Length: 418
Picture 1 (cartoon, helix red, strand yellow):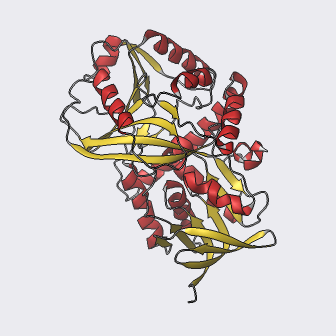
Picture 2 (tube, one colour; picture 1 turned 180 degrees about the horizontal axis):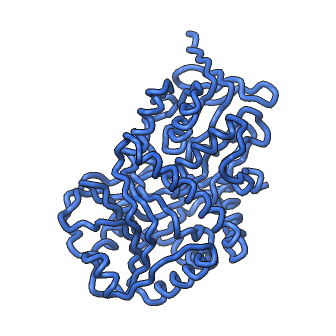
Picture 3 (cartoon, one colour; picture 1 turned 135 degrees about the vertical axis):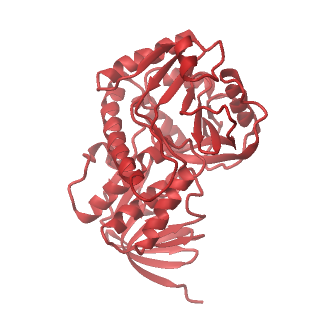
């Protein structure tokens, strides 16, 4: 039996927000694009995430004090940050690099890079929202709520650091926080408001962009899993899939948490761990928050999405494990009830989990492969895939066209880990 052979100019591996944004901007250039996705468009972590367009709060996951906090959390399966005990050399390497990045100097180096990435993406979101697509985009800020004075004061100190980079935030006492969010419990002792945050319905956004890319001629092959590659010299000659072989001129690897396993046969080691997150989507009650919230000590994001309300939480390093830990789902529900009134007995729409591709330094991997001439890497965005999607897609299109990129790509090169 002969496998089907497909010739294509550009092949994108991955149908999440990164791959679809790349398809959108590449077809905008008039290029011939094929995208392969092992499941369906927007079926992975792009589907059930918090839908936040983060701008101001650019403190990386690897920050001073995180390691000591994480050590207290990581063996508690109910905690916001859990590491499943296992012997895994890739995980140990990742944790070592994470520890090396968790210091003041590294944090200050990363903050301006994240801010530039987010600002560039925000501008593209605004352009996309001005078009004909509908994805419930709003920009009315985000309110952090605190129940613990020490945590509140620590976050205010973080804002003093961010202020050095041009970020402004509004610290509120408990009464002012409750005035901004009437559902907040009486024991909320304070809040911090970031005015420039945006939010959207992530599934509507990714699928809208996919439809536009298709209308421009992109071919989207869903249910098509990449099995391996054939190389010729320093180039990928063939991408072998469950639906036949593809002979592309250029390849974009945007497979999220599955990128390391796909890259390994190509001789590339990508320091990415699958960071499992959960969300609970309910029918929006009449008293639902009108802007995104962050329940600080519970580490729960609350996002209004039109007729839906979503609670997103936790970071779990458990490998490519898609099981649902019901204790962690219950912990999220408890946290919501500890901060907000009127959030019990809500009509459940969906409990979701997904794997986010996390790098140890909180920066994505964007750029050409150091060893393969026709491979571009676009992965490792962690919990910020949605926020960084448009700018990553734009940067991929600029790399493909040989244009000067909008941002300096040096901080995103995979070589930084070697």
